[in-house]
Length: 74
Image (cartoon, rainbow, N blue to C red; front, side):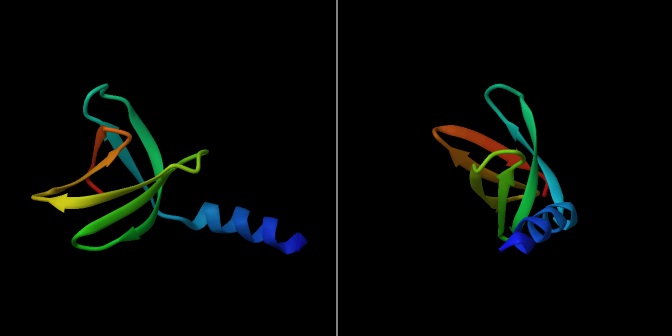
């Protein structure tokens, strides 16, 4: 079980990153990318357990969390 924490730290360092922006407030947050393809971007906001699923609309990904709209270029 002790190895779990070491592998989690290493896994966190190797994850791809992106930035999401709250359209209402203009606040941007760094995120770890869990899944990305041509249609879907799934992220977790850094230092939280908040997971957001964004769907591709034209050239950006758009998603909602607690009635807040977020965008990302992926």
